[in-house]
Amino acid sequence: MLGVDHARGRLGLALNGGCGAGARAASARERIEQSLGRLAAHHLVGDMIRLVRIAGAAVDAAAELDPGALLDDVRGLVRGGVQIRRAREADAIADREGARAELAGGLRGGPATRSIARGILPTMNVEELAAAVRRIDSRIGLELQWDLREDDDMHWMLALHVIVERPGRDHSRYSTVEIAQFEADEIQQRRDAQGIAAAVAEATALPLHAPPIEDRGGQGDSAWIRTQPEGSPHAYELTWEARWWTDDGEPANAGGVEHVAASSGYNADIQLSRVLERRFPSRPLSLNIRGSGGRYDDIGSCVGAGWPASLPDRERVREIALTEGCRASGIARGLVARVSELTTLALMIAFSEGFAISLEALAPLAGWRKGALDDAELDAALPHIARHREGWDRVRRLRETHAAGKGFAAFLREERRHAGSVRLGKDLMDAFGISLRDAKELVDDCGDPRNDVKLGAPIGIFDTGTS
Image (cartoon, rainbow, N blue to C red; front, side, top):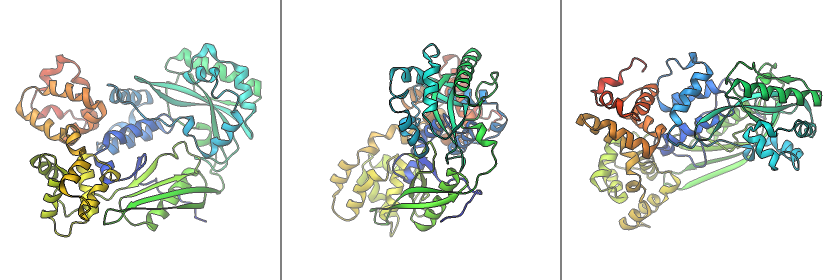
């Protein structure tokens, strides 16, 4: 039985599937999108700050922004068609499984459910909602919680939850079960949502907890649970899987079940992560832990290996790629010639970090090092470098185009069309060492030709006083 630990947040980056150093450096867009996706159900302000940290920018004024301003900032980042992955009810875990079974044949899945999920208020049926609430055991209250919905833009929602006396992610005694969502951007929508929730509360004889109608957005998850005293440790049963690579580039894995005593599923997850990180010292290390009661059990964590100190830096590795015509064999031979006793894993990390390729996809490098593949076969197995050159070479092209002194605005517009606002913003930060806010301003400005003169100015335009 593991002890309780409240002092440390979960290590690593939130990743879907495999873990690799390349996922850390080369998949910045995916990481940011995941962070934005978490805004839909987790702590808005905290996750916005994490987003800024992931992107490598200063968080100078983030803590002072109100939720509406943060949402506007997030909206600006996702304009341009960026699709944000969001965990939905189909991906819900432990504490929702019982509720899903209890709701089977009820609201979930039928035409009324689809209308409710879209927040189309005229189709709301208080009787159906009340019946769904009554099918959930251990209920003690109702709560409207802030959420976000994404389509072409992002919109505030109020999600109606049933508070249950059941261990969950945020508390060892209480958790919540979502049964409906309401649009909440406009004050009348919030009045309608609270009116329906109040009617359901009256019909089920349960207290209703809701944010003020005047508020437009706020911290996600249960405000009611956050006000409760810390619960007694509960033995969370966690299923885990760990994956890593040997120095020879071979995948390895282990898994098991542990019982972790903690005052919340979140703390149980953190504590087990720490134990597994000590148990498996190889890096990079991918961990997937399920059963803590959180909404994101499908998201693992990654402890990265960092850039191998023996290798040339990323820029130099990319220069080698350009010199070698983006051939995997030419790059690999160039690195092996420069570094004595280079491990296959270090070579894979260089490819992953430098060219946005997952470690799983780099298995052919291990075969090549063992002589199982010749140069031509390796090149055929790894076309990713040439195929994705537009992405990994963007930082260099941004610098060169800006230094040329003309056409920078048009270049930004074209890159935003291909890469999306989030990825272009991250590459601007890497290219010029600017803040997230300044990068966002450039991305926004490039959409209006009236800003072309400003965008064509010397590098000093990036010094806006907010970095």
